[in-house]
Image (cartoon, rainbow, N blue to C red; front, side, top):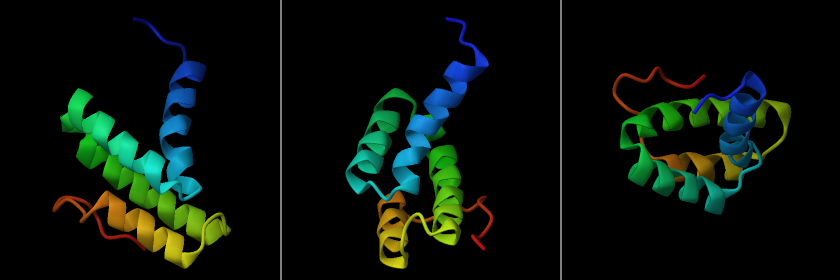
Length: 85
């Protein structure tokens, strides 16, 4: 199946908008769905989601307690993942 750039961007946005707004239930569902459909992508999703949390916190989209809660749902960073700023 071929997708265009706009479709790909929409898919990525759908996954990470939930992180940026602190929607814990949706983030949990994303992790569960990826764990079933594409477990090899879980570490990449978690790494990107952690970066989104940093940006959302800096922009004021989420507060510190929400950021902490999202990071808790995401779990500990993979060993190869660089530390957050």
